Length: 98
Image (tube, rainbow, N blue to C red; front, side, top):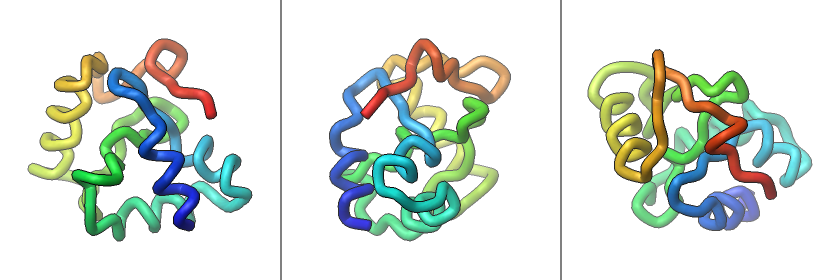
């Protein structure tokens, strides 16, 4: 799964990726990628806040599905210049392709 973290570092500022996109590139399942991101001990090195659901929903951050951690993820995304409307990111506009 080290490859997933390396791919994550390639997502440029102002872009996001999805659990499914990373999973496809790593030949695994989106759930496996979600589990990996949930256990990320170094979010400052491997910016897992840039991973959203395929629907554009923000999803969890640092193992939490609600509360302050989600607000932190939203804040980081917005700081990167990513617009969030009704809890979703426009994947067509802000999505990164590997």
